[in-house]
Amino acid sequence: MTTRTYRVQVAGQFAGLSPELAAQLRREQADHDVLVSAFTSEGSFTYTSSLTRFTLRYLLELQEGSAAEADEIAPAEGELRAADFLDSRGITHQPLSVSAVCLQDVKPRRR
Image (tube, rainbow, N blue to C red; front, side, top):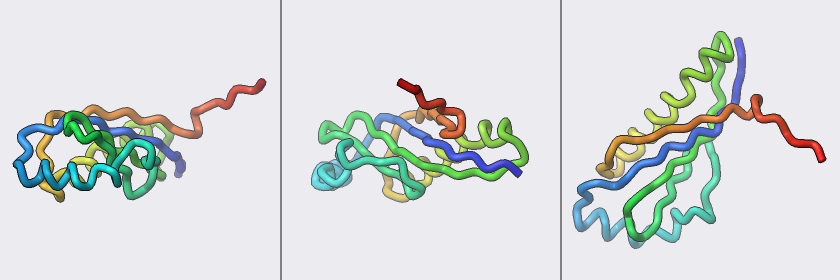
């Protein structure tokens, strides 16, 4: 069993928001500013008051049979979590784009 930790970023565009939901998102925008975002297991939802694009950031720890399996599952798991979050809030959107980076694969630069 292999354990790998991923930073998964899911980006998308708002689409067809109701006026009520758009007003609510604008009221809550300060709580979702990029300056207060982080990669967390619960997810971090950021957007600007223009309500064009949004980003969700997740820190995922996966235990799979191999590194290759975990690498394949991480983006799908991030996208699933993001879609569930957006659906639970009634946020309609265009197709999502996903990127995932395994922290074990990141090589620190030495100076």
